[in-house]
Image (cartoon, rainbow, N blue to C red; front, side):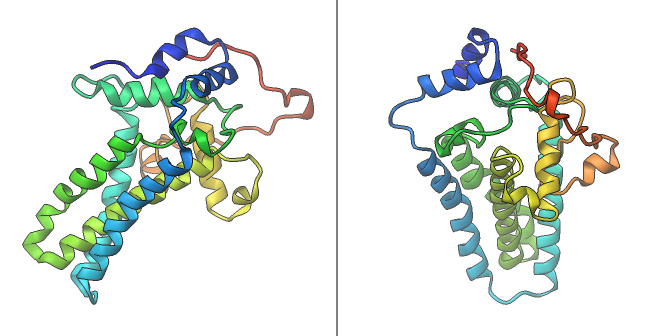
Length: 244
């Protein structure tokens, strides 16, 4: 499989701002970040709402299915992030390349902000991967719930779709303006700082792998201590070479 073009960019640039600039220069003129974001919302929120409408009135099995869906989401995000995305594992090398060698090459803990909506491609899953995940993986994950009936299976699938969408939106928010209005929302602001801390190159393989619910980071001891506030004299980010 041909490596993503951002891997070559990582070899050409010496700083994070230079890498981001090269990504923007080499981006297709037909690309639209707003369209990318809208598509991710469409392929996740649309099926989720349809599933919930068909599922009808909730009972005990519906509630259990939703809770298990959230729990499954925490497992997939944490262990998928900690291992294939940060360890080059045979057969799923693309996950490592796209995450560690592409996403992490575009940001560090001193450069976490995107410049505009067109930088969505530096943060979110590419459209084909998002479509495949929502169109194939989620329905397959819901199949075992058919043993309890159609409605619990639909609720479980809807919960996974909504968990994925929330993950993408919170991840995008973490790469928004530091100190902005979202940073001041209780709970959400903590999650944004939690993810930005993960972008410290010395720490990215070691902690803060959760995104929405830091359950597994807490249970498995990978919850990183918060970054120390920078003094005004050290507010300028250092010029250093990112990992390739």
